[in-house]
Length: 378
Image 1 (cartoon, rainbow, N blue to C red):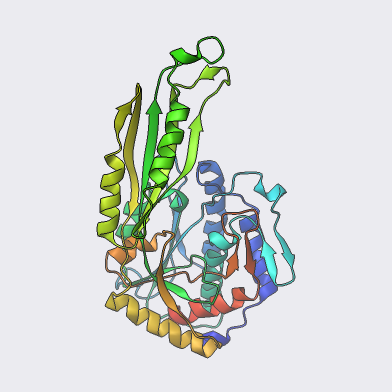
Image 2 (cartoon, rainbow, N blue to C red):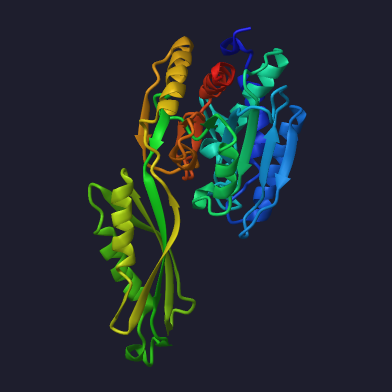
């Protein structure tokens, strides 16, 4: 049977996805992420996979690794499907962004990024098995808990697992035109801290040194460093407890992105050079997690992309491939030189917002694309 003609059913997939979406799993809530991993582990077990629950560390949830039945499993390098189950949406988001379908759109927290793509990957495997089709290479699925914060606790796991495989498929959200990602920009995160001096904001305002005011000035300075080769932004800030107190400390997080590794390295040096003391307030900068450049011109990735283009043509659309910003765990595997194809997940819009949704008709399209890749990679 042609894997591109497998009987995928949209309504069945939506029904299967619903419990995944209604199990909210924000990155920093390890227990919530583990509940989501429980659901995924159960679904993988129904496929006959050998499922392992790997404990979390650094305060994050655990991971799920599942090896699908195959006569060559463990004997030859196979295909790794790598996805994350954490989302940016806090517990309670379902109250304002419930799982619901409106025509060709379906809404829900984490549905596009990236539970939808993870689910259609399992559905592709399920339909292949039901049809009695055996993939040329063994397949392993790895779901991790911390991609949305840069993968600090599982990068080593992802890289070690990827090194055992011939190919890596990443079902992050697909592009609007159905295209895929064949390279990604470099990304660095930074932890920022200003330390001043406290005082009573009403009676002794001039005695204090406001860490908040100092951080505000630093944020402008940092974002003004953005240029065509390297961008800088501050997306998180925490400070203060009492409005009548001059805050003596303020913490923030910054992100820098560049198309070339050398540009990111220069940007990192510029950020670290900002550490200093001004007007009695100390400014500290520490480097956080970094995603390396994944260059789009690697031969192995080009090979997978050509196969994907051929499958897309049979499905009725022209596939494009491009390098892009917005990091993923594909940065790591692609930078290792392992043939990697990213953005194989569902199409939609509004990821990371309260309008996150997918195009329902992309469920079958992307499941068939994944099934085709699993059958043609060898």
